Image 1 (tube, rainbow, N blue to C red):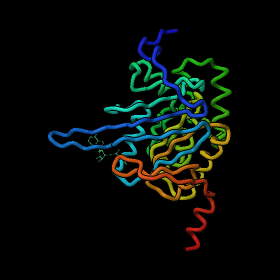
Image 2 (cartoon, rainbow, N blue to C red; image 1 turned 135 degrees about the vertical axis):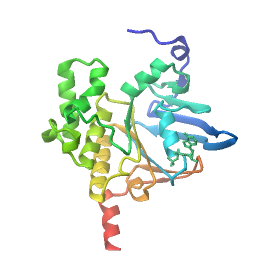
Image 3 (tube, rainbow, N blue to C red; image 1 turned 90 degrees about the horizontal axis):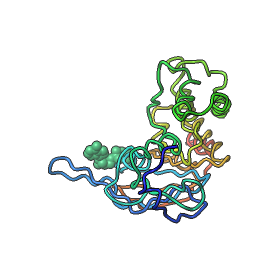
Image 4 (tube, rainbow, N blue to C red; image 1 turned 180 degrees about the horizontal axis):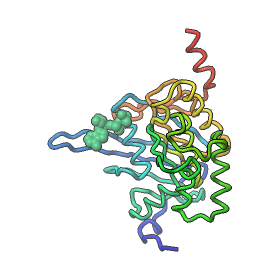
Length: 263
Ligand code: ADP
């Protein structure tokens, strides 16, 4: 196995063992010529194992910047993003990791879901879900068992051989949910995962999140949609790059939308 860089091997941060993620004073400013655009202005947040947390905010609040920083796709100017790598209370800060370690994080520790499904059109649902396991060089038998189990969780075991063009938007997003979980990540980061979907399909995706949360999967979902946010365990309100308030969620997703119909 390749040796990790000295830097992150030596430096660990104490993190409560029931947490998967501890974000401390995260800041990022985009500079466009002479204009400075502060996107994150001191974000602090914690996510527990098996917790479903929503980041709720309007367009421009900083949701995508936050998700991208947490997913090692973009880099903050300062602050810490500490993951409880082995659930042992010895956290590692991804802002101090090497590029190689970032790749490893994205492949094995972080599941990413975006608004647009980003599936490979030439691969079947099965092959799209299998890909992260192939890259991670997992053995074939393990791959087959895991991919089938993930497709079953999202209710697509009958559609394994279908290509993305043969599936609806909601079905394609379910494939990405299965793909995000396949390497058993510490957390799923979902950026506006239902942004392109109709109400029924949106409810379906949220129900899948609630189901995988029950088996211990942590999820952090960014959205501008107040209704779906309320189905999460906790809702953090993001405005102008700051979390301005926090409240309990946990509302029944069917009730949230049925109430709407009765109005
Ligand atoms: P949200 O996802 O909540 O819509 P973003 O994270 O995309 O918010 O954007 C937060 C702020 O940062 C906005 O003011 C946006 O214009 C700015 N921003 C985002 N990405 C860039 C970039 N690549 N260059 C410059 N400014 C950016």
